[in-house]
Image 1 (cartoon, rainbow, N blue to C red):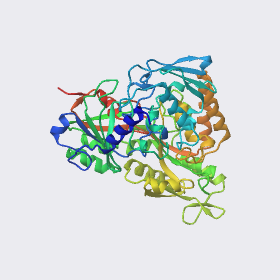
Image 2: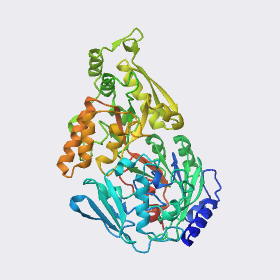
Image 3: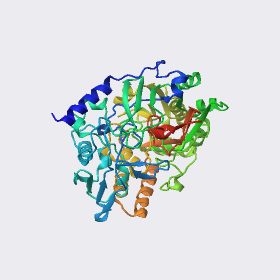
Image 4: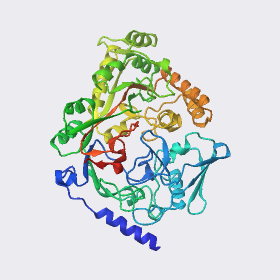
Length: 529
């Protein structure tokens, strides 16, 4: 074993055994501790893994790792591990990155081009169990040119490729010695980022300490803890009690902190939408007329007003109404008359119990939502109420994701999706038939050839107008053949103690709270004077 590998293994072992003492179960400490540079944040969930090879941090904002590029507050790409933005040649098929000088992993080993090549090749390896390989479908080869240069060759010009290179880079000398699916690196990561993981109590908290080797300078926030609290109400209670310095909260609970001079509320616009998956394998939701009727029956405006307290927008499809690629004339209000007409014409007739039936099959199905998520619960109940007005019976049920996942093949789920950066990033994994049933990709197992063609055209197109036309076709096809009932796009709300400066929010994806939020740039926070 090389000296580099011995050092890496020793540091990894040390990180695995280090524990940050905290006085509260969720990671809270005394006010004196926090004023010295400790922050405790309440989030709804934790990652399954901290390995980028399996998807952690793939869209940026990992505190443990860096990508070749990163995004600023306005989502503009900027150099990170790369010294500059890539040089693009060969008609958009070749991207060349030059690495920043002097970058070290937290174990002291230098970053080299070999680490970048290892990361991308492992992610793309069929033996690696991740569900985001399709996001890098354009990559043909990745190779090192010396120690400081990496060259990507693409199968076809892919306009948003540079934005895919926010993928965090892992150290080959550690991760390369392990099985990427089962190795200890998944819970004992080593990266180049501003923080190192010092403790992970699964289901309870993750604690991070400032990385003294960070190439960007040592952060003022020396330690921060992510307290994992699935229940929205419990998170709000612990924030109010002072056990937490900040938390992600639904609109109704964030509103309870208005007038609190010691705390500030931050609102982030997002691409995060709530939708009901309508599995094609289900005898009821697999019927296009049912799906069309539900789309017409739902009152999106009421959901925004009553559930989100105005902190969001109606969702007429996967793209928000203010996205440049959104097709404006697909906006539609609740139309119960149309819903009933669609069902009548398709042979779904009202039964004696008031619920429609066809061929002995009642228009009834179950709808699952994640336990403890008040926003999803309220959406599910409102959806069931709207469906009932069209004589469709929806039974709402809460469950953990462990229970939901094996059932989602043929049971509807109140789900959340949405990615920033480019329409391809969120739409392909949501809708392309090649990804039906691939983990949480294409949960509805949607299969529409016209939508597949539009996705492929949008992914491969170089001309902005050509790409826009493809996504226009896609959105119109979804109205005619909805595989999901799109409900709302949600603004994300965060409440934090007013002790630090430099807090901002970005336009956020569905995945938020852990990586996104006002703490997306926690390494740049400065204490208030």
